Length: 142
Image (tube, rainbow, N blue to C red):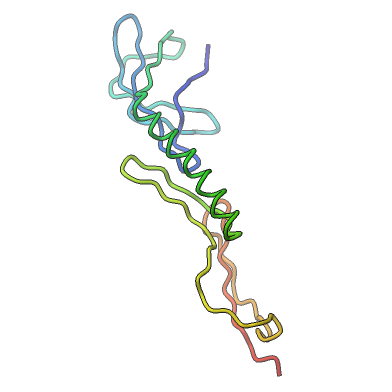
């Protein structure tokens, strides 16, 4: 079987840790990531070869904490969207703390859009896989 239950470092969630076992020998799983679309495990020691039959043991306390934090991110996102309309632009789940990035606004606004004037687009940049940054300048509407 060529599948794994280990979650790779992806989508703002850290990878699983644990171990792989073959015939009573344990091989610590230090890192799990994606390489060329495949899940790859970095082990704490050598000795396994392709085709070895292994059993995987996930550090369940770590995984469960990340599952709880990930679900909390979704609930927080839904609440913030419902209350403010702000969309979530990213998140990062960690062992000590987690964070959610959002377009929430507490700034000052004009009373109506006609007061803005003209908007001149200056530049656009990629700021990650799904985020863009746009530079602009407002000009008087004379």
